[in-house]
Image 1 (cartoon, helix red, strand yellow):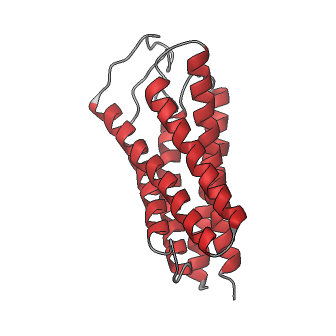
Image 2 (cartoon, one colour):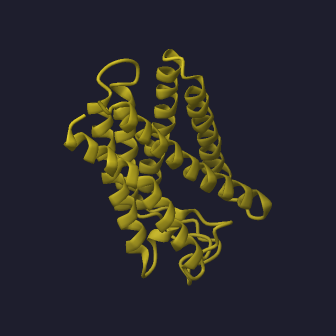
Image 3 (spheres, one colour):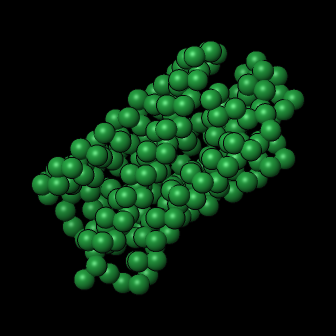
Length: 216
C-alpha cells in the first residue's frame, strides 16, 4: 500500500471520532439544546452554528478521502468498486448537510417557537442530503457484508448487516416519527443518535480493517 493511500485511509479514520466528539460537546453545551429531543442537525443554527456546519463539511471531506483510500486498497473482489462509491456518497451527503442548514425547530435555537414547523428550501435540501448520505451508508454496510460473507468472515458480515439494519430502522423512525412530543420523540431521537454513533463506529472499524489487511 502506498503512502498516499495510507494517508487517505487515515483521513477516513479520523472522520468518525471527530464527528462524535465535536457533536457530543455541542449537544451537551449549547444553551437550549436538548439531546433527548433535538437532532444534531439543529446545531447548525444560532451563533455557534458555524461549528456544526464546519463539522459536517470537514467530516464529509475526510470521508471522501477515506473512500478513495479504500478504492485504492481494495484491488478486487466484491464491494471493491461499489463499497467505496457508497462511502463516498455518504461523504457527499455530509457536505450537503453542511451547506444546506436545517430549519430551527422545537425551541432551538433559543427564541424559536416550540411549535415551529416551517420547511424552507434549504431545510428540505438538508433532509435530502442527509437522506442520500444515510441510505448510502446503509447500502455500504450491506455491500461490504456480502464481501465478508464471500470471504468466510461471518463475524464481520453479521456486524455489517446489523449496523445497516439498525441504522435503517432508526432513520425510518426519525423521518416518520419525530414530530410528536413526549416519550415517542425521546425514543426516536435517542435511537437515531445511537444509530449515527454505531454507523460511524462501523465505518471507522472498516477503515482500520482495510488498513491492516492492505499492509505488505
